[in-house]
Length: 99
Image (cartoon, rainbow, N blue to C red; front, side, top):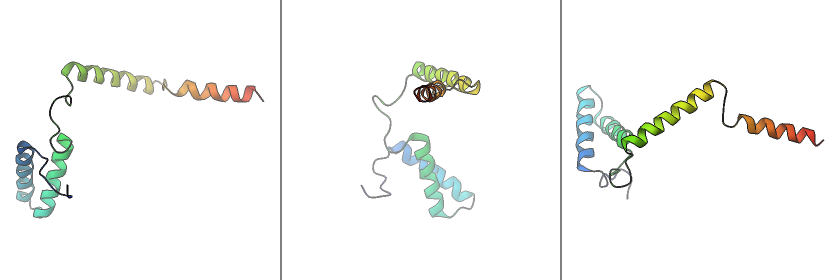
């Protein structure tokens, strides 16, 4: 697929890009720049061409669990409990103990 080919995008993604492009042009942006920004926005929002479908989406329960896990890790890191912290000090200690 050549660079810039939009055949893998869904109709909804194409409509969204067109609408975003028109919005940028109304703000006075160059048409080529507006098109580039529009497609960049669609890619950022949807992950690229035709990403929806079986096995791609997470259920609301999985999303909630992932958010909870992420928040727990962030708090632990903030309080100085990095998951890698103990490993490095244990290695250092064992290396110096053998000398």
